[in-house]
Length: 171
Image 1 (cartoon, rainbow, N blue to C red):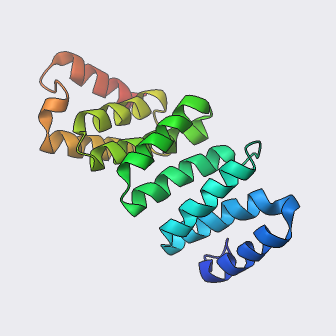
Image 2 (cartoon, rainbow, N blue to C red):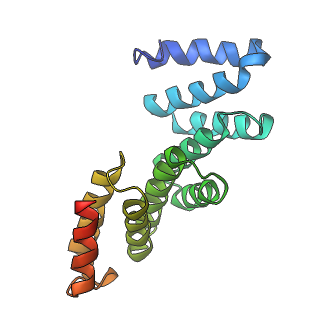
């Protein structure tokens, strides 16, 4: 049901699995939280991701759950919590598949908190460390949007800025 996008059915089935199959509970909580996130039930998603992180700290799903928790907080409008959780993920996990969405979520949280320069810096770090990565185009678009409304976040009229941008686009 989850892979087919039938989140209502997935939520019911995964909730049952989380309660009745302890061996699979970390996976069930992870996918339950993601189904709830996709279905718009952000508070329940936060609850299940937090439960997974607290009860199964050694689970292979912890890095992904940390990023998903940050995204759920952001959807709830709690940019401060999203920023804190995404920053924590960046400090702990070194996999590009975790760092890219964590950095993007952190940038979005900073932007939601009115910290345009911090958001821009995070987006540029994402672009520099993962050029042509799956989030590069989105990061570039958001960085340009920030620059269009707040050009003071970067020295866009310098040769260095244009050289760096060219290197990113050509790498």
